[in-house]
Length: 233
Length: 292
Ligand SMILES: Nc1ncnc2c1ncn2[C@@H]1O[C@H](COP(=O)(O)OP(=O)(O)OP(=O)(O)O)[C@@H](O)[C@H]1O
Ligand SMILES: [Mg+2]
Image (cartoon, rainbow over all chains, first blue to last red; front, side):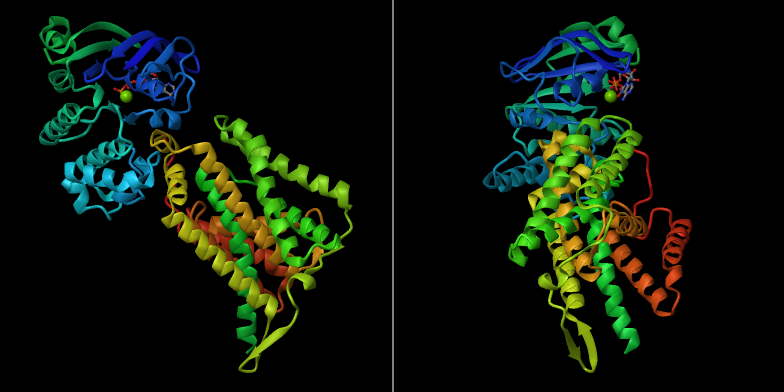
């Protein structure tokens, strides 16, 4: 479904992602794990078109999207929930969701809202509230709900558990599994490797801009080196 | 009585400042640019209306030509001069805007010369007056205030309620996140310029009807005052631009009316300095947070 081949991404002369390739097939949950600054967010931004790779290609559903504008990539069915949630803090919950459905026909918007509100009843209660006054967990739900409004085939999540209490983290991961069961393919980036690998089918381990290991998630969870570096021994 | 007629006078001037200030504020809100060419758009609007009326076009059409011309010109400037600099340092963008401003002024100088040209204001707005309870109010003033208030109400409606208006707010709050929603950011930026300069076009006609003399540099002072109004209200804020515009307009008229007309500009700048000392982000501005 998503195929990333030999991308090299730079910030000025900082070489953040080095000749990296990976793949996500339809129906999978794939996790990318790595320490701070490993290049996880950079990879996701390159996938969604916010950043460009100097080389190689990104293809989605069999078509090259490497030079497609980000808003057109969303139209193809790829939604990116960015790191730090990035909800529109001065807009209401419902307006945020409406922005998520920017690419959709008017008739699809109310169906989308209904779907998101049934998945996140908390957002329904707060639909008129300004997003800046939501709690961190609610903002994460809003960010995910907002991405769902574009009816994505592939959802790319950048550290959805960041800054959340353990109970909420579990809840967010439960939702991710549910979305996947309902047919959305998931590419997940996390520092919380334990959680990320326990929901994923496959995982990639990233170090300073390059993939150093690729395996089934269950095998990565058992891998001594991975345990040592990312799972707290 | 004297007070009331000065009040209306101030509201008239203030509503023009507010219309122009909105363009500064909207553009700043969306791409963090102080668009110094905005004032010169007003000058272009004035000359366009003059030429159209001179060519025998019906006044209503001349007004539309002028407003439409301002809109197209601003979008061309945005696409040609500002868009290529979208990821350049903000200072480059600012200097480009000053360059565009000088370019427009000098083109006007070349075409129309430095001599002031009379603006056919009376063929656009009738110069009569109505008297309400012994108070005589110029129709120009009434029309100016009504047109401005209606335009601002329409803008508010667009920004609050329509899909494109909400997208404008989303882009000004977080451009990258807006992109990830599938919002065509470049288009939204162009639309913002278009709306801001259509308002400036309306402001231009109203201003020229009040001060019916056209010069190539007429946009500078008006632009500067409107810019101050936008900063005063909190740049980036729509209600702020409106309140700031009226505040400056009223202050100017009242300073004039007590016989201190040579002090008008000093007072305007003084207000700016005092307000910014007390509230650095203006009446309605959010405290400046550097985006990371
Ligand atoms: N805007 C930028 N300008 C310059 N360098 C950057 C920029 N963004 C990221 N980098 C650098 O690129 C590298 C990869 O950053 P990236 O944000 O992709 O890491 P990450 O794996 O997402 O980290 P984290 O877990 O902290 O989110 C880092 O060394 C970082 O310092
Ligand atoms: Mg990151």
